[in-house]
Structures are given as structure tokens and as C-alpha cells.
Length: 118
Image (cartoon, rainbow, N blue to C red):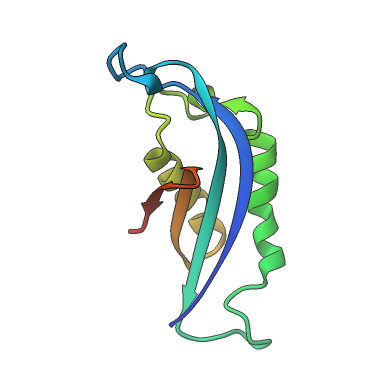
């Protein structure tokens, strides 16, 4: 199995109001997010790629236009603006474009990561 990945970055705010008032994530706050999309294939294409990395730039455009410097709760339309929900959201968006997508990872900090992999 061949695996490639590419990562993108954006800054945004969110609030997890479903948590108790004493939880710091219940307050409005922001992160410098990293989104990593992973693609897998048993076979390589005619030029030797799983997929040309340049094709994945459509994800960068989507992130910049919809998520960068936005309030994620507003973008997703609910209060479940967790890294886990973002990973699933980006996975679903990517899977519609590239069948080779196998996982998406979202990092809120360099030390934390949420992954969606069906």
C-alpha cells in the first residue's frame, strides 16, 4: 500500500459551550490548526503517484475561504466544533473529490491530534 499526505494550516476560534463553565474550552478561544489529509492506493498512477500533490490544493482553497480566521461554531452550524468533528468534516469533503483519501488528522496544538479514519 502506498501512502501520501499533505498538511495545511489555518487559524480560527471556537467555543465548546457544552462543557462546564469551569472548563477552559467552554470559553471563546482560538487555535492555529493543522489539517493533514492522507491518501492510500495499492497501485500508482501512470506517472508514479498515488495522486499529484498539486491536486490537493483544492483543500487549501476550501480551508482558506471557509475556515481561516472564522468562528468554527458558525461554519459548522453547531456547538460541537471539536477537532474530532473537524477531522470528519474534512474527511467527508476530501472523499467526495479523491477516492484515495484514507484519513484526515486535525491538530489544535503541536501535542494534540484528532483523526478520522473510516
